[in-house]
Length: 317
Image 1: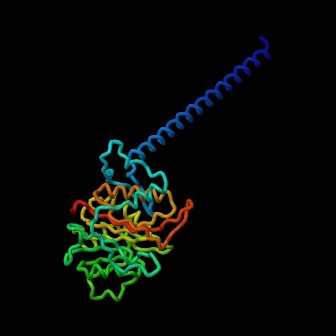
Image 2: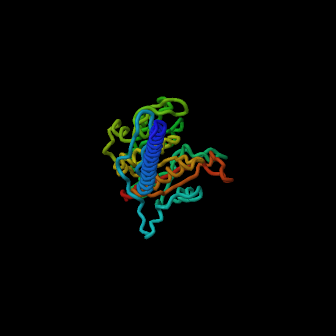
Image 3: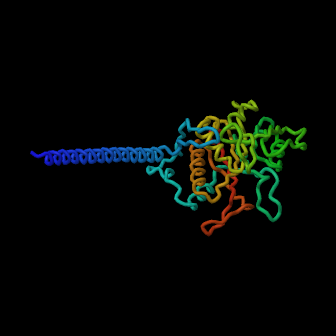
């Protein structure tokens, strides 16, 4: 064999080896990518299925750390075979139909100042169920009220009724006119964590419901009426108490709350889930009043931006 032929043969063999090496590396990279994508897709599918099967395993991001759900919450009781309450909210009509259904209290009284003439704003008046066993008992009842602003008519009326009232609002100072009444005020807000929250660009101090109870030494006491009007923070309150401190709900007779669904599908679905969880824990929705003082229009419909809700703990009946 000539030197030229030998050299050509070596070059040919070297080219084949390089080609085989490139093909092998390409196959290896392709196989690795396929395995990675399959694993990623499998994890995504499993995560979706887990969230579908466990809709209440919620976590949410705070400014400094992540809070994870600790206690699973029972589903809403339903005796039908198809368990229809587990169907998701499909549209706004279903949502409003769900939150507007109310029954279960034979004697509801509106406490506080009525709306001004010509308006339907209900900030100063709250529904209270006066049925036997759940009605506040004058002389021994306890009321916790969050988010009064400068409207104190409900708190003053409940104090005059004979209840000890604990009032909380981080946006106002100590009101001088409350001196001499059985109303105890602290400039704190109610939230999903204890710390600082942003409210309209201002930092305000907030506490969890459990920490509020510890602060006023009522952790083991029965709360006759829990009033909450905290401008959207009710979602954080619900998220915390339903997932971390659900046992505290057992000591609450009535919850009067203003909810703010607004035109957000994400907020709507979360709020619906939280209300459904509350109702699964034996709280009957006995009153639902749209506060038509503030409205918004979407999907060619005008609706209330706020709803005044009242739930009664059936375990006290």
